[in-house]
Image 1 (cartoon, rainbow, N blue to C red):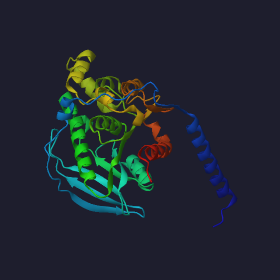
Image 2 (image 1 turned 135 degrees about the vertical axis):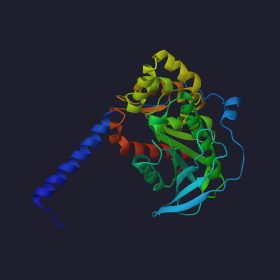
Image 3 (image 1 turned 90 degrees about the vertical axis):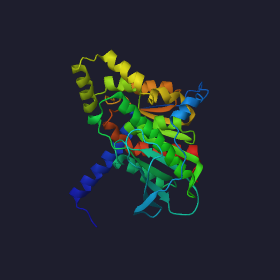
Image 4 (image 1 turned 135 degrees about the horizontal axis):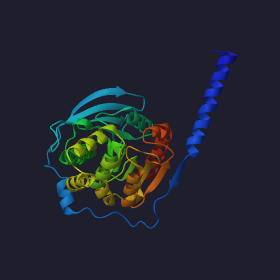
Length: 329
């Protein structure tokens, strides 16, 4: 098909613009390798292991085929949790499975909100097309507008860990997953969940954590996100000062990314922090990075939502990271 001169000019401008944007984004980030003085993570204490444990039982999953591509198939898997502390929903995830015989490295991806969105689906497609199985978790349904207590936040985060660990139980018993090559990732709220899950689950070998931070008290008090600010305002109208809110959240949110960060092996982590983030402020991201032992980190010249411009770059870098760490073949 021949293009007219005008169309050719438009196409040329789009191509040049895309190349220029890629060059600008590539130059507008700063990379720091893991702290060479890092000596390893803290040992998970017995009480921590007990807190995130659940009764053993046979997993009887409902499996529905929902998609098929050349290199992989997509299954929706659902089964009841052995322990519910937040609500009674079933554990659900979309399983991108390599369409050939063998056991493959598998990445567990935590979504930003309730269900997988275009962001995490893009990661899954990229990874699955490059030889990885992928698990797209469905979060327990939760509306930030409905959160009214620190106890609810704690129950939600603890349930994240309980659900994730049971998903690993399911995965390692299949004949399609290499139990020694499990990774996880998440961005934004998914990044918070990836942090706490990596800390509590020893079978996860490496993690990509994007735009996360800690503590939850600091995030609540300094975030510019509407529902969080509304919660803070409502508490203030009831007479609660910032110090009271901080003390309440710090005392009752045990499953806090900042508190659990020392149990994650910094040598097996890649972090992304947005320099101008006002949803999970950079200072909270920096605190999480330091508490984790200063892992490999990339600072992006963006805010929380404008970091979407970097998604293609983050996808490729994350793929390279998982290939290196999990020795994908």
